[in-house]
Amino acid sequence: MRSTLSSRAGGVAVPTLRPRDALEHPEATIVDLRSPAEFALDHVPGARNVPLFDDVERALVGTLYRQVSPERAFEEGRAIARAKIARFVADLVAVVGNDLEDSDLEKRLEELTAGGIAALEASIACEPSAAVHSHPVVLHCWRGGLRSKSVVAFLRGLGLERAFLLEGGYKAYRAEVAARIAGWNPPPIVLLCGLTGVGKTLVLRELERLRPGSTLDLEGLAGHRSSLLGMVGLEPTSQKAFESALVARIRRGFGERLVVEGESRKVGDVILPPGLWRAMGAGTALELTAPLERRVQVLEEDYLATAESRAQLLRQLPRVEQRMDLPAGSPSLAERLEAGRVDELVRLLLARYYDPLYRRSEKGRRYAASIDASDPARAATEIAAWIESHAPAIARPEARS
Image (cartoon, rainbow, N blue to C red; front, top):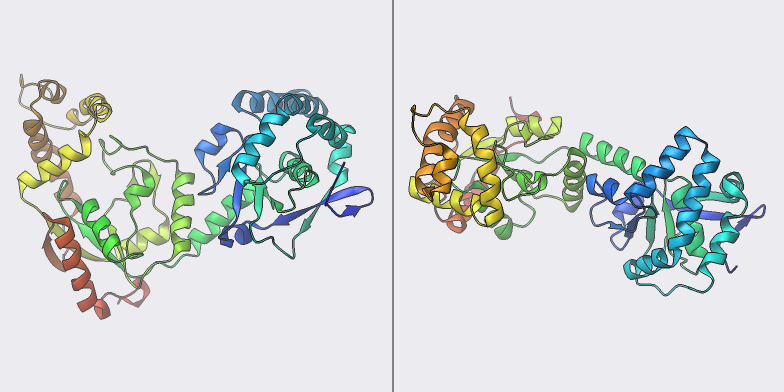
Protein backbone atom coordinates (compact mmCIF):
# COMPACT_ATOMS: atom_id res chain seq x y z
CA MET A 1 0.00 0.00 0.00
CA ARG A 2 1.46 3.28 -1.12
CA SER A 3 1.70 5.89 1.63
CA THR A 4 3.13 9.37 1.80
CA LEU A 5 2.85 9.39 5.58
CA SER A 6 5.80 9.43 7.89
CA SER A 7 6.23 6.26 9.89
CA ARG A 8 6.47 6.02 13.63
CA ALA A 9 7.17 2.60 15.15
CA GLY A 10 5.43 0.85 12.27
CA GLY A 11 2.47 3.22 12.30
CA VAL A 12 1.50 6.34 10.41
CA ALA A 13 1.49 9.98 11.38
CA VAL A 14 -1.57 12.07 10.57
CA PRO A 15 -0.92 15.84 10.33
CA THR A 16 -3.35 18.02 12.27
CA LEU A 17 -4.49 21.62 12.14
CA ARG A 18 -6.01 23.55 15.02
CA PRO A 19 -9.50 24.93 14.35
CA ARG A 20 -8.17 28.50 14.49
CA ASP A 21 -5.51 27.77 11.86
CA ALA A 22 -7.98 25.95 9.62
CA LEU A 23 -10.56 28.75 9.85
CA GLU A 24 -7.98 31.39 9.06
CA HIS A 25 -6.80 29.52 5.97
CA PRO A 26 -8.80 31.04 3.08
CA GLU A 27 -8.08 28.20 0.66
CA ALA A 28 -8.94 25.33 3.01
CA THR A 29 -11.62 22.83 2.01
CA ILE A 30 -13.40 21.62 5.14
CA VAL A 31 -14.90 18.13 4.86
CA ASP A 32 -17.36 17.13 7.57
CA LEU A 33 -17.50 13.34 7.95
CA ARG A 34 -20.40 13.37 10.43
CA SER A 35 -23.87 12.10 9.57
CA PRO A 36 -26.29 14.34 7.63
CA ALA A 37 -28.37 15.03 10.77
CA GLU A 38 -25.30 16.16 12.72
CA PHE A 39 -24.23 18.35 9.81
CA ALA A 40 -27.70 19.90 9.48
CA LEU A 41 -27.73 20.98 13.13
CA ASP A 42 -24.50 22.95 12.70
CA HIS A 43 -21.25 22.87 10.76
CA VAL A 44 -18.28 24.99 9.84
CA PRO A 45 -19.59 27.58 7.34
CA GLY A 46 -18.65 26.49 3.85
CA ALA A 47 -17.93 22.89 4.92
CA ARG A 48 -18.93 20.02 2.66
CA ASN A 49 -20.69 17.00 4.13
CA VAL A 50 -19.27 13.66 2.97
CA PRO A 51 -20.62 11.33 5.67
CA LEU A 52 -18.84 8.12 6.48
CA PHE A 53 -22.13 6.84 7.96
CA ASP A 54 -25.68 7.94 7.26
CA ASP A 55 -28.03 8.76 10.15
CA VAL A 56 -29.28 5.17 10.59
CA GLU A 57 -25.78 3.69 10.35
CA ARG A 58 -24.41 6.19 12.86
CA ALA A 59 -27.23 5.35 15.29
CA LEU A 60 -26.52 1.63 14.91
CA VAL A 61 -22.78 1.97 15.45
CA GLY A 62 -23.36 4.27 18.43
CA THR A 63 -25.81 1.84 20.02
CA LEU A 64 -23.40 -1.07 19.61
CA TYR A 65 -20.59 1.04 21.13
CA ARG A 66 -22.66 1.93 24.21
CA GLN A 67 -24.60 -1.29 24.75
CA VAL A 68 -22.27 -4.05 23.48
CA SER A 69 -18.61 -3.03 23.08
CA PRO A 70 -16.31 -0.69 21.16
CA GLU A 71 -14.96 -3.73 19.32
CA ARG A 72 -18.41 -4.78 18.10
CA ALA A 73 -19.17 -1.21 17.01
CA PHE A 74 -15.85 -1.08 15.16
CA GLU A 75 -16.58 -4.28 13.26
CA GLU A 76 -20.00 -3.02 12.22
CA GLY A 77 -18.54 0.30 11.11
CA ARG A 78 -15.83 -1.54 9.20
CA ALA A 79 -18.40 -3.63 7.35
CA ILE A 80 -20.44 -0.53 6.46
CA ALA A 81 -17.33 1.30 5.22
CA ARG A 82 -16.21 -1.68 3.16
CA ALA A 83 -19.57 -1.87 1.39
CA LYS A 84 -19.60 1.80 0.44
CA ILE A 85 -15.91 2.70 0.14
CA ALA A 86 -15.96 3.21 -3.63
CA ARG A 87 -18.90 5.61 -3.42
CA PHE A 88 -17.38 7.38 -0.42
CA VAL A 89 -14.09 8.00 -2.24
CA ALA A 90 -15.95 9.14 -5.36
CA ASP A 91 -17.91 11.67 -3.28
CA LEU A 92 -14.68 12.94 -1.73
CA VAL A 93 -13.04 13.27 -5.14
CA ALA A 94 -16.00 15.35 -6.30
CA VAL A 95 -15.48 17.70 -3.34
CA VAL A 96 -11.70 18.02 -3.23
CA GLY A 97 -11.13 17.95 -7.00
CA ASN A 98 -8.20 15.61 -6.72
CA ASP A 99 -7.49 12.39 -8.60
CA LEU A 100 -6.89 9.56 -6.14
CA GLU A 101 -5.61 6.07 -6.67
CA ASP A 102 -8.87 4.15 -6.86
CA SER A 103 -7.65 0.60 -7.39
CA ASP A 104 -8.22 -2.07 -4.75
CA LEU A 105 -10.02 0.29 -2.37
CA GLU A 106 -11.56 -2.55 -0.39
CA LYS A 107 -8.18 -4.24 -0.07
CA ARG A 108 -6.56 -1.01 1.12
CA LEU A 109 -9.31 -0.59 3.70
CA GLU A 110 -8.86 -4.17 4.88
CA GLU A 111 -5.13 -3.64 5.33
CA LEU A 112 -5.68 -0.47 7.34
CA THR A 113 -8.32 -1.96 9.66
CA ALA A 114 -7.39 -5.67 9.80
CA GLY A 115 -5.92 -5.50 13.30
CA GLY A 116 -9.12 -4.25 14.93
CA ILE A 117 -9.87 -1.09 16.84
CA ALA A 118 -6.96 -1.28 19.27
CA ALA A 119 -4.38 -1.88 16.55
CA LEU A 120 -5.78 0.90 14.36
CA GLU A 121 -5.76 3.40 17.20
CA ALA A 122 -2.19 2.43 18.09
CA SER A 123 -1.01 2.71 14.49
CA ILE A 124 -2.12 6.31 13.95
CA ALA A 125 -0.22 9.12 15.63
CA CYS A 126 -1.41 12.71 15.28
CA GLU A 127 1.26 15.31 14.59
CA PRO A 128 0.59 19.07 14.64
CA SER A 129 1.55 20.33 11.22
CA ALA A 130 4.37 22.83 10.89
CA ALA A 131 3.85 23.31 7.14
CA VAL A 132 0.40 23.59 5.60
CA HIS A 133 -0.35 22.82 1.96
CA SER A 134 -1.55 25.84 -0.02
CA HIS A 135 -4.96 24.20 -0.55
CA PRO A 136 -5.42 21.90 2.47
CA VAL A 137 -8.30 19.46 2.76
CA VAL A 138 -9.25 19.46 6.44
CA LEU A 139 -11.40 16.54 7.56
CA HIS A 140 -13.17 16.07 10.86
CA CYS A 141 -15.76 14.08 12.74
CA TRP A 142 -17.30 14.96 16.11
CA ARG A 143 -14.15 15.08 18.23
CA GLY A 144 -11.28 14.14 15.95
CA GLY A 145 -11.49 10.49 16.91
CA LEU A 146 -10.89 7.27 15.05
CA ARG A 147 -13.53 7.99 12.42
CA SER A 148 -11.69 11.00 10.99
CA LYS A 149 -8.15 9.83 11.85
CA SER A 150 -8.57 6.64 9.85
CA VAL A 151 -10.12 8.49 6.90
CA VAL A 152 -7.21 10.95 6.76
CA ALA A 153 -4.72 8.09 6.97
CA PHE A 154 -6.60 6.24 4.22
CA LEU A 155 -6.75 9.27 1.92
CA ARG A 156 -3.11 10.13 2.35
CA GLY A 157 -2.35 6.53 1.48
CA LEU A 158 -4.28 7.10 -1.74
CA GLY A 159 -2.05 10.06 -2.57
CA LEU A 160 -3.99 13.00 -1.11
CA GLU A 161 -1.01 14.65 0.56
CA ARG A 162 -2.97 17.78 1.39
CA ALA A 163 -5.34 15.87 3.71
CA PHE A 164 -5.21 17.08 7.32
CA LEU A 165 -7.13 16.25 10.47
CA LEU A 166 -8.99 19.01 12.30
CA GLU A 167 -7.54 18.75 15.78
CA GLY A 168 -10.29 17.96 18.27
CA GLY A 169 -12.93 17.76 15.54
CA TYR A 170 -16.26 19.58 15.63
CA LYS A 171 -16.12 19.74 19.44
CA ALA A 172 -12.92 21.77 19.31
CA TYR A 173 -14.39 23.94 16.56
CA ARG A 174 -17.36 24.72 18.81
CA ALA A 175 -14.97 25.74 21.60
CA GLU A 176 -13.22 28.07 19.15
CA VAL A 177 -16.58 29.59 18.15
CA ALA A 178 -17.51 30.19 21.80
CA ALA A 179 -14.13 31.78 22.49
CA ARG A 180 -14.38 34.04 19.44
CA ILE A 181 -17.83 35.28 20.45
CA ALA A 182 -16.86 35.77 24.10
CA GLY A 183 -13.79 37.77 23.08
CA TRP A 184 -15.50 39.88 20.42
CA ASN A 185 -15.74 43.60 21.15
CA PRO A 186 -18.29 44.94 18.64
CA PRO A 187 -17.74 48.32 17.00
CA PRO A 188 -20.01 51.18 18.14
CA ILE A 189 -23.54 50.21 17.14
CA VAL A 190 -26.27 52.09 15.31
CA LEU A 191 -29.72 50.55 15.72
CA LEU A 192 -32.37 50.73 13.03
CA CYS A 193 -35.70 50.88 14.85
CA GLY A 194 -39.23 51.29 13.58
CA LEU A 195 -42.70 49.79 13.41
CA THR A 196 -43.21 46.41 11.76
CA GLY A 197 -43.24 46.70 7.98
CA VAL A 198 -41.27 49.92 7.59
CA GLY A 199 -38.62 47.87 5.79
CA LYS A 200 -35.70 47.81 8.22
CA THR A 201 -34.20 44.72 6.61
CA LEU A 202 -34.52 46.23 3.12
CA VAL A 203 -32.70 49.35 4.29
CA LEU A 204 -30.03 47.27 6.04
CA ARG A 205 -29.34 45.36 2.82
CA GLU A 206 -29.08 48.56 0.82
CA LEU A 207 -26.70 49.98 3.40
CA GLU A 208 -24.50 46.89 3.15
CA ARG A 209 -24.45 47.26 -0.63
CA LEU A 210 -23.52 50.92 -0.24
CA ARG A 211 -20.99 50.38 2.57
CA PRO A 212 -19.76 46.76 2.52
CA GLY A 213 -18.90 45.47 5.97
CA SER A 214 -20.97 48.10 7.77
CA THR A 215 -23.93 45.92 8.81
CA LEU A 216 -24.81 42.75 10.68
CA ASP A 217 -28.05 41.05 9.57
CA LEU A 218 -29.10 39.20 12.72
CA GLU A 219 -32.45 38.10 11.28
CA GLY A 220 -30.68 36.76 8.21
CA LEU A 221 -28.27 34.75 10.37
CA ALA A 222 -31.12 33.43 12.53
CA GLY A 223 -33.49 32.72 9.65
CA HIS A 224 -36.24 34.44 11.64
CA ARG A 225 -37.86 37.90 11.84
CA SER A 226 -38.20 37.82 15.62
CA SER A 227 -41.97 37.49 16.06
CA LEU A 228 -44.65 34.81 16.26
CA LEU A 229 -44.90 34.92 12.47
CA GLY A 230 -41.20 35.53 11.97
CA MET A 231 -40.36 32.11 10.55
CA VAL A 232 -42.81 32.34 7.63
CA GLY A 233 -40.95 31.95 4.35
CA LEU A 234 -37.61 31.48 6.12
CA GLU A 235 -35.56 28.58 7.52
CA PRO A 236 -34.84 29.16 11.22
CA THR A 237 -31.40 28.02 12.31
CA SER A 238 -30.22 26.39 15.51
CA GLN A 239 -28.37 28.33 18.19
CA LYS A 240 -25.13 26.61 17.21
CA ALA A 241 -25.61 27.35 13.50
CA PHE A 242 -26.34 30.99 14.31
CA GLU A 243 -23.14 31.26 16.35
CA SER A 244 -21.13 29.62 13.56
CA ALA A 245 -22.52 32.10 11.04
CA LEU A 246 -21.86 35.00 13.43
CA VAL A 247 -18.21 34.00 13.86
CA ALA A 248 -17.83 33.67 10.09
CA ARG A 249 -19.21 37.21 9.79
CA ILE A 250 -16.90 38.48 12.53
CA ARG A 251 -13.91 36.98 10.72
CA ARG A 252 -14.73 39.04 7.60
CA GLY A 253 -14.47 42.21 9.68
CA PHE A 254 -16.56 45.35 10.10
CA GLY A 255 -16.18 49.04 9.56
CA GLU A 256 -15.73 51.57 12.32
CA ARG A 257 -19.47 51.61 12.99
CA LEU A 258 -21.84 48.65 12.92
CA VAL A 259 -25.49 48.95 11.87
CA VAL A 260 -28.00 46.36 13.05
CA GLU A 261 -31.76 46.17 13.38
CA GLY A 262 -33.17 46.80 16.81
CA GLU A 263 -34.05 43.34 18.15
CA SER A 264 -35.17 41.71 21.35
CA ARG A 265 -32.69 39.45 23.15
CA LYS A 266 -34.19 36.48 21.29
CA VAL A 267 -34.48 36.33 17.52
CA GLY A 268 -36.83 33.40 17.08
CA ASP A 269 -35.29 30.66 19.20
CA VAL A 270 -31.79 32.15 18.93
CA ILE A 271 -30.40 34.03 21.92
CA LEU A 272 -28.03 36.90 21.13
CA PRO A 273 -24.59 36.73 22.82
CA PRO A 274 -24.28 38.84 25.99
CA GLY A 275 -21.53 41.09 24.62
CA LEU A 276 -23.48 41.91 21.48
CA TRP A 277 -26.68 42.46 23.44
CA ARG A 278 -24.94 44.90 25.80
CA ALA A 279 -23.46 46.79 22.84
CA MET A 280 -26.89 47.02 21.24
CA GLY A 281 -28.36 48.32 24.48
CA ALA A 282 -25.78 51.10 24.48
CA GLY A 283 -26.19 51.81 20.77
CA THR A 284 -27.43 54.93 19.00
CA ALA A 285 -31.00 54.45 17.75
CA LEU A 286 -32.37 55.77 14.47
CA GLU A 287 -36.10 55.63 13.79
CA LEU A 288 -37.28 54.43 10.39
CA THR A 289 -40.76 55.43 9.31
CA ALA A 290 -43.10 54.66 6.41
CA PRO A 291 -46.77 55.29 5.57
CA LEU A 292 -49.23 52.54 6.40
CA GLU A 293 -49.75 51.67 2.73
CA ARG A 294 -46.02 51.07 2.29
CA ARG A 295 -45.86 48.92 5.43
CA VAL A 296 -48.73 46.76 4.20
CA GLN A 297 -46.96 46.32 0.87
CA VAL A 298 -43.67 45.31 2.53
CA LEU A 299 -45.36 42.74 4.77
CA GLU A 300 -47.36 41.20 1.94
CA GLU A 301 -44.18 40.81 -0.09
CA ASP A 302 -42.37 39.30 2.91
CA TYR A 303 -45.03 36.86 4.09
CA LEU A 304 -47.10 36.01 1.01
CA ALA A 305 -44.50 35.69 -1.72
CA THR A 306 -45.16 31.98 -2.32
CA ALA A 307 -47.91 29.42 -1.86
CA GLU A 308 -45.73 27.74 0.77
CA SER A 309 -45.43 30.96 2.74
CA ARG A 310 -49.19 31.49 2.56
CA ALA A 311 -49.82 27.96 3.89
CA GLN A 312 -47.28 28.45 6.67
CA LEU A 313 -48.84 31.78 7.61
CA LEU A 314 -52.27 30.16 7.69
CA ARG A 315 -51.02 27.62 10.25
CA GLN A 316 -49.44 30.29 12.44
CA LEU A 317 -52.26 32.86 12.50
CA PRO A 318 -54.28 31.16 15.30
CA ARG A 319 -51.31 31.58 17.66
CA VAL A 320 -51.31 35.33 17.04
CA GLU A 321 -55.09 35.58 17.28
CA GLN A 322 -54.96 34.17 20.81
CA ARG A 323 -53.08 37.33 21.82
CA MET A 324 -55.47 39.75 20.08
CA ASP A 325 -58.77 41.15 21.24
CA LEU A 326 -60.98 40.68 18.18
CA PRO A 327 -64.66 41.62 18.31
CA ALA A 328 -66.96 38.70 19.14
CA GLY A 329 -68.37 37.04 16.06
CA SER A 330 -65.88 38.63 13.65
CA PRO A 331 -64.07 36.46 11.08
CA SER A 332 -60.88 34.84 12.29
CA LEU A 333 -57.51 35.87 10.91
CA ALA A 334 -57.27 32.59 9.01
CA GLU A 335 -60.73 33.09 7.52
CA ARG A 336 -59.74 36.53 6.29
CA LEU A 337 -56.63 35.11 4.62
CA GLU A 338 -58.54 32.26 3.01
CA ALA A 339 -61.13 34.72 1.70
CA GLY A 340 -58.38 36.78 0.05
CA ARG A 341 -58.89 39.77 2.34
CA VAL A 342 -55.14 40.22 2.63
CA ASP A 343 -54.93 44.01 3.01
CA GLU A 344 -57.57 43.89 5.71
CA LEU A 345 -55.71 41.09 7.50
CA VAL A 346 -52.36 42.91 7.46
CA ARG A 347 -53.86 46.19 8.65
CA LEU A 348 -55.64 44.37 11.47
CA LEU A 349 -52.43 42.61 12.54
CA LEU A 350 -50.59 45.93 12.61
CA ALA A 351 -53.28 47.84 14.48
CA ARG A 352 -54.23 45.17 17.03
CA TYR A 353 -51.00 43.25 17.54
CA TYR A 354 -47.70 44.48 16.11
CA ASP A 355 -47.93 48.23 16.67
CA PRO A 356 -49.07 48.06 20.32
CA LEU A 357 -46.45 45.42 21.04
CA TYR A 358 -43.69 47.48 19.45
CA ARG A 359 -44.66 50.69 21.21
CA ARG A 360 -44.58 48.94 24.58
CA SER A 361 -41.15 47.49 23.88
CA GLU A 362 -39.76 50.86 22.72
CA LYS A 363 -41.25 52.94 25.52
CA GLY A 364 -38.71 55.46 26.74
CA ARG A 365 -36.26 54.98 23.87
CA ARG A 366 -34.85 58.16 22.34
CA TYR A 367 -34.04 58.39 18.65
CA ALA A 368 -31.12 60.39 17.34
CA ALA A 369 -32.85 60.93 14.00
CA SER A 370 -35.94 59.89 12.05
CA ILE A 371 -35.65 58.73 8.44
CA ASP A 372 -38.32 57.83 5.90
CA ALA A 373 -37.67 54.26 4.75
CA SER A 374 -40.22 54.18 1.92
CA ASP A 375 -37.33 54.14 -0.57
CA PRO A 376 -34.75 51.76 0.97
CA ALA A 377 -31.86 52.93 -1.23
CA ARG A 378 -32.48 56.58 -0.42
CA ALA A 379 -32.86 55.78 3.28
CA ALA A 380 -29.55 53.88 3.25
CA THR A 381 -27.81 56.86 1.67
CA GLU A 382 -29.24 59.17 4.32
CA ILE A 383 -28.19 56.82 7.13
CA ALA A 384 -24.65 56.53 5.77
CA ALA A 385 -24.40 60.32 5.58
CA TRP A 386 -25.84 60.74 9.08
CA ILE A 387 -23.37 58.23 10.57
CA GLU A 388 -20.45 59.93 8.84
CA SER A 389 -21.45 63.35 10.12
CA HIS A 390 -22.09 62.11 13.68
CA ALA A 391 -19.23 59.60 13.93
CA PRO A 392 -17.46 61.22 16.93
CA ALA A 393 -20.65 60.96 19.00
CA ILE A 394 -21.12 57.25 18.26
CA ALA A 395 -18.68 55.78 20.77
CA ARG A 396 -17.97 52.32 22.02
CA PRO A 397 -20.16 51.28 25.00
CA GLU A 398 -17.27 51.40 27.47
CA ALA A 399 -16.52 54.98 26.41
CA ARG A 400 -20.02 56.20 27.29
CA SER A 401 -20.64 57.83 30.61
